[in-house]
Length: 290
Image (tube, rainbow, N blue to C red):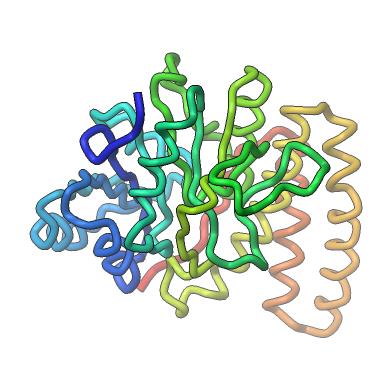
């Protein structure tokens, strides 16, 4: 079965995304059902969206549970065979969905599809084969796609398990794509279907410092956990122990310089490693109070 507007839904996970979400939604149009999962208890945001967009339902998670867990909620609420997850800082071009519909008629078996980023400097995929792939091909196989735009064939997920919810931020999409590859299933990029990703624009800029502190903690935690889960403890240590040692040195340097922000940043980087190494959950959350 090919994809169409009748069997596709869209899921968008948000957090403090009031200033950017409307551009994303309006690029989709009014014919596709949209589920927004807001990682807070913001009733005003929910009511505003549902009043403005008749094809949209907003669900509140009541706390910041992370991208993977929130996407799982949205995917499971959809009633269509196919679901496209988007970050709120993604916008579609006028022909983005139509190109996906056309390509799906010629792909007999897929688990995940993705449009291609319009920014050639930052491709949203990793190639399976070492040889150069002709980007003008209508579609081509890849080993993973970035999580800001992924289309799922829900029939391939009979266990109804999508993202590993132990990831709070980073590499949950790589983990899922690796699982798909190990099952012998296929992931494709649709080269004529383009999206624009603004990148790191989902939150108001006033939260930039808190977001950066959170990124430093979770990048190392997720990197260790991803490698340990999929390749073993030795690979996890190889990929992260130098990051940890460097973070300790930089923490001491900025401690002596009395640079509190950078001291905290490198402390967080070391803490992410420490918590992952000892099997602790990805508990760190940014302070996003208004």
